[in-house]
Image (cartoon, rainbow, N blue to C red; front, side):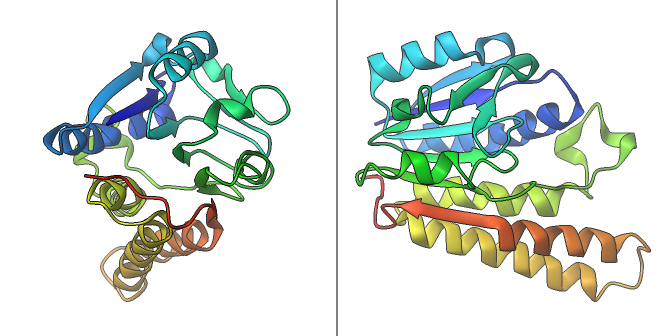
Length: 215
C-alpha cells in the first residue's frame, strides 16, 4: 500500500504541521505502508501530480494552507484546486490538514463515489508557545491539537473506516476540550479549549465513509 504526504515548511504554521506529521509517517512505515514524503520544496503541484498519477496511492495526507477551493504546498503554491485538478484525488482516501477546503474542494472531489475526503469546512486553529518554535514536537500547548488531528491518520492506519477515523479524531478534540475547559492552572486554557471545540465542529468526512485501508 502507498501513501503520499505533503509537508511544506516555509512558515511557523507549516513547520508545526510538518514536524507533527512525522509521527504519522513513522507509524505508517511500521504498518508496512510505502510512504512518499514530499517535504519542503518538493511539496509542489508538479511533483505531487506526477507522484499521484504514477503511484495511485491508497491514501493522501495534505498539510498546508488552504481556502474553500484549494490546498497549497511550498510557499503557498496551489497543489490541488477544485475545477482544475481535483480529480487527481479520485479513488483515494484524502485527509487535508488545512483551512476551509472541506467547504468546496471536498464536496467537489467526492462527487466521485469511490473517493473519501476528510478536512475542515472553516479554519483549522491551533495554539502554540513561542518558546518551542525551534522544537514544535515538544510544545505542550500545541500537543492537544496535533494529537487530535493526527488521530484521523492513526485510526485509518489501524484499519478503521474513514467515518470511524473522523469520529475518533473528534472524540480526541472533545477529550482535550474537556480537560482544558476544567483547568484552573493556565489562564489561556479556556481560549485553547474553544479552539479545540471549533476544530471538532468544523471537521467533515465526505464521500465514501466506509473506505478503509487493508492493513
